[in-house]
Amino acid sequence: MKKRSLIVLFLIVALTALAACGKQKAEPSTTATPASGAGEKAAVTLKVGATAVPHAEILESVKDKLKAEGVNLEIKVFTDYVLPNTQLSEKQLDANFFQHLPYLEEFNKSKGTKLVSVGTVHIEPFGGYSRKVKAIGELKDGATIAIPNDPSNGGRALALLEKNGLIKLKEGVGIAGTAKDIVENKKNFKIKELEAAMLPRVLDEVDLALINTNYALEAKLVPAKDALFVEDKDSPYANIIAARDDNAKSDAVQKLIKALQTPEVKKFIEDKYQGSILPAF
Image (cartoon, rainbow, N blue to C red; front, side):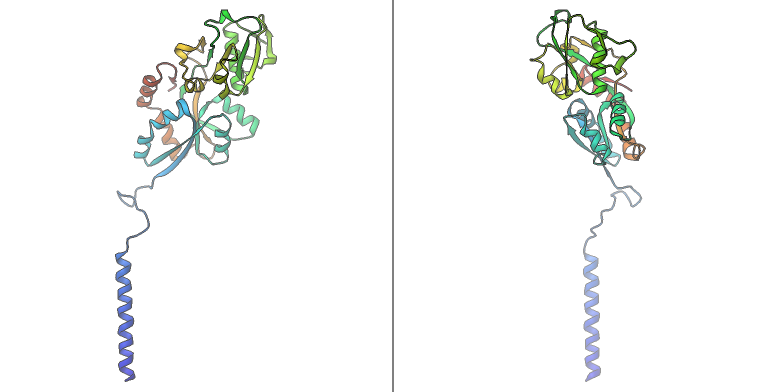
């Protein structure tokens, strides 16, 4: 009797084990595998900060190309010039696209960050805009001129004012000049320093505003048509892809800059912006 009971018990255990094995084989795996073989790398997400126009638009144009290369491009749009660098430094972003090299160098110097340029993409010729006059010769004595308040763009704006004969700066200061370096101001222009993003909004309140092209485009201003004067096309202020010194050579970041420096992107810039934005590669 005991022998028979032991046999029955053994059979029950064996059948239970077989059933469990069969169920395990029937359940699908929860581990994702590459569709074209185990040797293929899984896709990576690349988080890039950008201002809306034209930077985010240019990035959107290469999304599909990067996806085909295993990079999911995630674009985070900013409305200022500080947070994109701060978040990149804090590793909340992998790269950003909104600034030129002089601005990046000034930011690193003042904030102690270690951000680097990966490569250039386009140039945004800086321009002077007005809703009160149609030529700079019409600017009256004591007119108010608004410029960006960050050091690199502020110096750039003053240098452009000097080039157009509105002021004279201390010899040798170049693009590093500040309002304190103005040595000649025959018409007693009042220089008003404001956040760059604010400049299009104050056009009705000032006589002239020097506006970064990305903010001008967002405000539906066309530099080639609406600006009283703009920088030459050989401006050294090419906009760059920036990354940290610890990830600038990563596969995903390198794929990003290569995707942006192509004939297709050059044509996209030329067709879409009609001279307001110029390719820099």
